[in-house]
Structure formats: C-alpha cells, structure tokens
Amino acid sequence: MGQRESIAKRFKRGDLARAYDLCMEALRSNPDDLWLRHRAVLCLIRSGALERAQADYERFRLSEARHDEDCRALGARLLKAVALESDASRFAGRAREAARTYAEIFQETGGHYPGINAATMYRLGGEADLSRRLARRVLEACQEDLPDEPEDAYYQCASEAEAYLLLGELGAANLALRRAIAQDRDNFIAHATTLRQLRLVSRTLELPEAWLTGLEPPRPAHYAGHIFEQADPDHPELARRESRLRQAVADVMAGQNIGSLYGAMAAGSDILFAEAALGAGKPLTVVLPVPVSVFIDTSVRPFGQNWVRRCEDCLERATDIVEVTSDRQLMSQLSLNHASSVAMGLSRIRADVLGSRPIQLLIRDDQVRTDAAYGTYRDAAAWAETGAAQCIIPFRRDGAPGATSELPVPPARAGFEPALRAMLFLDVRGSSTVPDDRIPDFVRHVLGQLAEACDALDPAPVYADSWGDGLFLTFSTVADAAHAATRLQQVFSRIDLAALNLPPTLGLRIAGHCGPVHEGQDPIQHRKAPFGAQVAIASRIESVTVPGTIFVSEIFAARLAMSAQPGLRCEYVGLTEIDAYLPDMPLYALRAVAPDSLEAQNRRLSARTEHPV
Figure (spheres, rainbow, N blue to C red):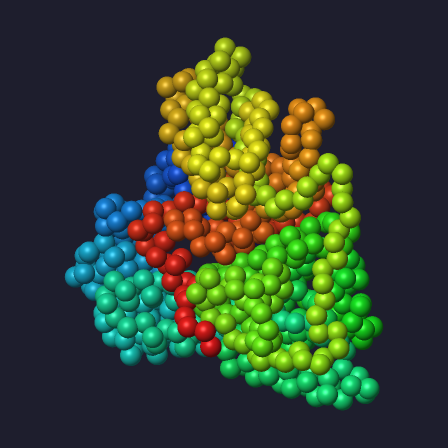
C-alpha cells in the first residue's frame, strides 16, 4: 500500500493522529507535495487543533495554491471554525474574513457550497446587503439539474434552503429543506449540520425556528426501568403486565420519534426496551457496569432462564456493547451509577451530533420512595437535573414476585479502596529532538511553566506524578479534569519556543479518561496512588493524541456531556487503535470555546431542554 493510500485509510477510519504523523513523515522526503500538506492540515482541523492547523496552513503556504480549490476551501473552512469559536468582540471581523475567502472561491468556481457559506458568514458578520446579493446568486446556481449522487443532491437543495432563509423567505426555505431531506433521507449527520446552520441564521435574523423542529432526525433516548420476573403461565397477571408494557413502549417510541437507544440489559424493563428497539430497526447501544458474563449472572440469570435467552439475543443484535470496567467480580453501586451516567451522556452526545432533543424513557413505579442511591429512581433524578424530557410509563410493583433486588457487596480488597477518577496524561511530543545544550531551558521554561500551572489548579488534582516530559493527574470529576486540561493547553500555547531556541515542532499532547480505579499504597513512592486497567487506557490514549490537542475517551466525553460545562465541547474524532491488544476506541477532541461564541450557543441549543412529557 502506498503512502497516500495508507494515509487516506487512516483518515477514513478516524485515526487522525497516525494519519497526521504519516503525512509529516512523508513530507520529509516530499516537502512540496501539496496533497500531503493539505491532508496534514485537514487532520488537525478534524481533531480540533485549530491553532496548530492555522500555523501549519501558513507554514505550508497553502494559501498560495491559487489553482487548487481544495486548499483554498480548507483555508476558508479554518477561518469559519475560528470565527464561530471566537468571543463576541472578535466574531464580526473574523466572520467577514471567512466570508471574503469563500466569496473569492465562489467568484471563480460558481459552486453553491462556497457561495452559500460566503453569504451566511457575511450576514453573521453584519453585511446584510452583500449577503442577500450572494444568496440570490446561489439560488441561480442551484437551478441546475440535481446531481445523481444523493448526498450531492441533498447539499444543493440545502444550499437553496439556506439562501431562501437569508432572504427571509421562510416558506420557500421550508419547501427546499424538505426537498433536500427527500434526496438523502438517512443522512442524519448532513441533516444535523444543515439544521444547526439554519438555526444560527434564524436567530440572527430573528425568524421563528419552530418549523425546523419537525424536520429533526429521530431523537436519541436513554432508557431505564425496574427489574421483574419472567412472565409465565403460572403468573397470568405477570403475562398481562408484560404485554401491556411492551405495547406502551412501542407506542412511546413511535409517538416520540425515537431513533437510537442507550441503556443496560437487566431482566425486565431494560430487555423490553431493547427488544422494542431492535424490532423497530433502531440502533441499540448497551452500556454495562461490568463484563457481559458478570452482568448476566448478577442482573439477569436470577430472574429466570428465559430472560437470559432474551438478553443474549439482544446483545447479539446490538449495535454496540460498552463495558465501562473490566472487573470480573460482582458489580458495585459505583460501577452501576457510572455505567448509567455514561449511557445518559452518550444519548446527549448523539443528540448534539444530530441537532435533536434527547429524551429519557422510564418504566417506573411512582408509588414508592424516589431517593434510591442507584437504579431507576437515581437515573431519573440525574436526568431531570439536565432539564431534558422524560417519558414515564407507569408500573406497579405491588405483589409482583422478584420486583426488586439488592446489589451484592464486593469482597474487601485489603489496603485498596475503589474510587471513580477522571485522569489526564500529558507529554511534550518531540522533546527528544531538543539539543542537549537546550535541555536546561526546556526544563525551566516549558516543564516549569506546566508545573506552575498544575500547582495553581483549583480544585487541585487528587493525585499528581511526573516523569521526564510527562505528567499524570487524577481528579474527582470529569469537569475538573476538563478545565485543567484546557488550562494547561493554554499555558503551553503561550510559550515562545522560538525565543527559547527550542524546536518549533514541540507540541503538548493531553489525553483524558474516566473510570473506576483502585487507590492504595504505592510500594515504590510510599504514598496512595491509583492503579488498574482504566489508568492504562488513559495512558494509551495519550500515545495517539495529535500534538496540540486534547483527546478523551468516549466515556470521558459522555460524563462531561452530563455535567453541561459551558465553554467546553467534545468533537468526535473516530475509532482509533490505542493498543494492539485492545479494541479500537472511539475518541473525542476536547476544546475550550468562548462562552459567548456562536459555537457555544449552538452546543447549548443542539440538545435543547423541555418540560417532561
């Protein structure tokens, strides 16, 4: 396989770190290869490293490639991304700069894509008349016959809808958008991108957005409910109850336009939700607190062999199975609540990606206390705090055999305590290229500034360690870890490497993960330290992180989504091989954005809250 094929394969899989490294390696022997330079910058943009992408875009002189439309569009895309993340005081100027770049491309190519982006960015930047003129020209460009490729046809109609909206013609925009969706009905990611853009335009023009709600992709849902025994001929009431619940679940899923579902697979309610999802052809992600076999023995097998059969059938057909720990002993309250929070967070991430509204589906008995430390009531309370919708299917447990269960207590592990920790691994990529005579300055002015920033973190890390050019930090919450990561990234970005006569290729890599650890005495350092498989996963993520970025696990991103931190966002990078002995892992790029930026507004509105159903 040639260099380009290998890079393209890695890029398509989402292995952006390795794709970027391969580009840089190839550029050493082919420094003028335009494709390699373009793809290297694209890797950085896709992974959220906008500052480093801008630096490489300029260093590679891609703006001078006037004959290459892809390179020019890449520059416009970079300017647009930077503008949308800017604070309010800088946004207008940056928006107009992006608009001018898109407009130049449109002038030469006549393509609707650069044209509509130019029109929108001019409007967002305050140039209303110029925006309207460009929108009318885009409408002219969209009068051509639709392309045969469904996605291309979709984008042409979507550009037409956006142009009509910029002109204030809401009815025509509605019709054009419906026509666009009809061209490529299942391309929900493309639909979401368009909806997010149209909402942005609508807010700018103070136009109603209600018409967009009915065109949203299907809603992601988190599901939860009580455990109950298998219906059988000896318990006709149980059989009737299950039949009623099964119909109620099907009705709710249809009535609420449910798409993908996220939850566990315990006997009873969970399996009813899972069977309904699979029966309707919906994607199902099963999130378990322990490995599958341990979970079945704890939460399925005690309630009847028929539940085991149904559980195994659902697991076999599930889209994905996420095991949040590798603990082969009985699950605990800590791991159970952790898994539930991850499942809820994944549904919110999916809603963010789709530009739709997440919802929680519950089979719940409201006749009893609702302050349980784990289970259905705890999940309901945690979701309610986010303000998102809940749909409750009533369930009476009175007189039902096996209606509840107690979590077993794991055996004590002398000297070690279980704890949920958010972990960060950091290192300075390229430190081995620092000449020996510059090592003292590297230690004092690079590692020293990072160490000072760590000392100033509030709240402070629960645990901190260092070796060579690396740091390992743990925190009580993912929010604390995320803020620490972005703070350290900002500190490094302000270090003037050229003034210190240090290699310009030095880059800080930060990786984040969250999971249960065992905290106990370190026999070497003689202090309490975290141990376990989750620590190893965090360290492996760091090794594939693109310099200048923060890569976090899907579990970290899901927990952060549930904490709703303003000014922070996680962008999906892709499935990445972090270790030859581990499955490929979905990774996300964590970024800090200005709280008053349009990007932050988009994130807050993409998973909008509403009153309970």
